[in-house]
Image (cartoon, rainbow, N blue to C red; front, side, top):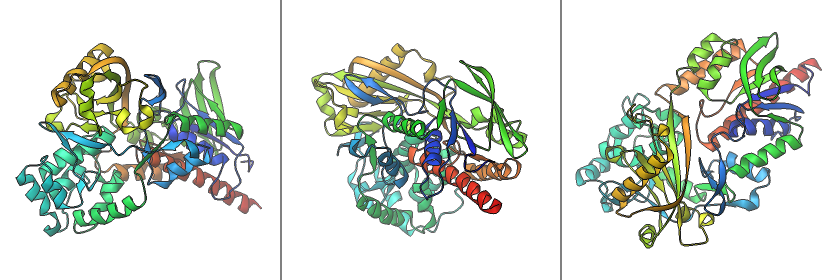
Length: 479
């Protein structure tokens, strides 16, 4: 290693890979920045699941996530660092609903669907009286038993079936495209934190009070989240880093204390890139084959990771009937009520900058999730069928005939990793294997320790800091 010009190769140019590259070139802790950082991306565009494009006369409407958690400092800090401070905005005060035999406003005072008080539930007509009484008993129940690291088991133990099915599962399941009955509690930090106290409700009340005092929940650039990935790419290249697209990694091999990455590029053909360190920020199923020469055991642990497919149908709708949705940011559909649509977001109500010049409305409707019938692969449907399904279901849900005058369909096939119970223990095992067999490799990204943008940014910064610390330590020993 020729410090400080050690070469780091990052596989994957999603938010994790781009953040890691930026942070290696712009350390937070005063470490010496690197000058040789290469990001390799198999597709023709950067950003991963962050994709923003013009729609309905609005310059930037997101096709994937449309914001990040503002209360997790890493994401907001990074946005401001790359020059987006004056471009950030928060959602409007519009409220969300749950579709269960009609639209019901989500009760106030929830934290990831978990009640922080019995009174707001009592006022809501979403739950039955039996469900309300069962939830109200939570503070007098003994500490949780063996929830087997399952979100569903944990919530049902504490609050009963209705809170799980009608509140927590739609909210958490909507974020992760998950069936929370088979999803790891430990990978949802806001919920996992509540499992440590005797009363989940009382703990959630304290946590929510602190969170509310910290400001808005969500934040995004007005030009869309693509502005963040574009700003990161600009920063990387300005600092001397390299981003290579349309290039597939075929294998990563250890050669003594360094690594050889064999690639195939549509432009240059087969090439081998040498690196002192490697950050793997690609999806688990993609990473497993090219990591097999490095460690068969690691590859075998990565390969079985399951992923859910989701379709995002964006429409611009017109008509006086849209006034029915005034003040609403959208609604969630619980599994007992689902056909194919899992959620509808009234984007023009949620984001003030998504309002077209006329009286039309931009809506984003999600279809598909983990656990859906195997014959019901909506991502394989053609656009016309998907739009028709959205129109029919929204009419059934709301009583309003949606009249799309423009639409856009984005298919996120096998894009949402599913964290089965025991997931973090499996990740720890993989990290231990890497530490032993390939100490210059770091694993990060949505397949590892969290799917959210803030989580991916945090993982990327941790990986970058670890590499810089290793380089600094090696330099001190050599000197």
